[in-house]
Length: 427
Image (cartoon, rainbow, N blue to C red; front, side, top):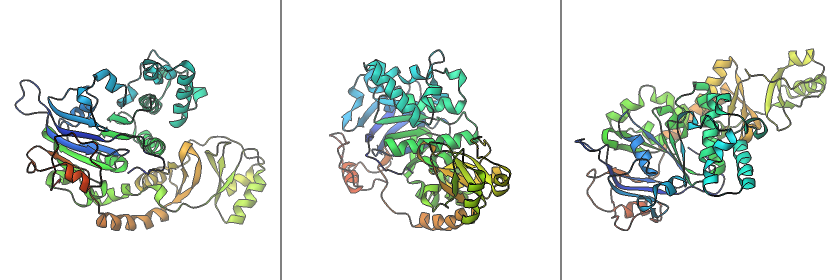
């Protein structure tokens, strides 16, 4: 559930009775799917393997051509557009970033801008801007090759490349499925931080329901043939699954999954004493004691946390240095309370350092704060209200009008094709 702080630059998408029928198959891979994806939102496609969610994703940029139906992006029927032209307007991210191994990071990011005829100075500036956006120092990473990067770094570069030409739509196919759990959490947080700045329309396929709850503004649960079983907010999918299929897909522990509905930036953080490298340790210790705090957080010149120093450690030092503590528990402010709690447990710590945009220090979160927020999150989920976007398959409801449903949901109908009708019962 993305926090919007800047102007939306994403585009609305409407799949209008889209079908994909492969030759020789008795059932369509995707059957008559109508799906509204609001501009600037993150929509997660989930469901069992082979249910058609990746096929649906790839039809949006026509890596797979639909057999019938329309795909409308910001009012334009893109099924009539040249496929290559369309794909240059849509970012696409796959596992491990899909980077070209013989090209540097900068060259990988610059591929689409070069195709579009950007000049070298503009491309170079854009590459550095995007590396900063995905928290990779351009001076360190722009000339490296993919083999010199970790899996998480490759994925960040893949996101940067997808955003290079500033596309309104970003498609992501299991982007974080090939990395370890800790890296996956950090990449998820980074994506949410990026989204808070760029406000694109993001459609992502995942097998991980927890990931869908954490990232999605809306979750589309598919069964075989891309039959849309439920399309709603994460809160309502958890609190009111549409049927037994959705219940089984969510799995056990639905109540615990409510922890993923509240983010760190939605709770009050605790303040902490901060210090800069080069300060006298005795001065920092005095501030820590005066504030009644157990430790100080050392920040670099860009206000990024590098280590924590307890009172005992400060008493043994003369000067605060900038040694990086890789084991320090750190969570982004876009992380969920579940992520924060996991981070503390792994570090055997009752607190975690919280960072925001560009990894800048924001404060500290502790276990008590999380416990107090759990009750509030559960209560809020039970009372959640609001209309979901339109989502259905042909024959799921009487053929009565979709346009009216869009208007009822607060949309202007500008992304519908001319022959859409009103749907009085969109769900």
